[in-house]
Image (tube, rainbow, N blue to C red; front, side, top):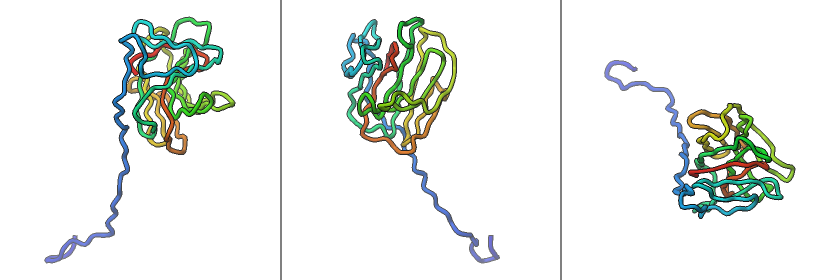
Length: 193
């Protein structure tokens, strides 16, 4: 540390800044207990509230989309969660998705859960649904799954409970898109968004 009667001798001091942006608190929620989905606007599919849950079956378009009304149009740092249930049987696919960075029915990102136990993150373009990351975990049909999507800049993490099911870095932060619920020609039941 130095010699007697002198101060310590130190090398170069490196000062680092940690740029941490916690998920923004968006005080918007919908539990559907009042028998309606006041904060949602259906875009595609047949959306109804039954027994305090938001249910969807595909219409002629195939895909289903319902956009949530929020105070902000920025999905840069946010946590979106819902309780999702998939039916045991359906004449449609069995899947549900949390949509984000939504621009129109052919331009959005998603995190989805599929009846075969597939957990996916991807993007919807005019060419269709592109799955960019995938995890697997089987679950029983008609079981409530707590599903969350955490977005930090360009990084997206799909979880059930505390378990990470898939993650993907889109390379550029999001901004300006909306959030919502949907499916790929699938039937699903949502609650507590």
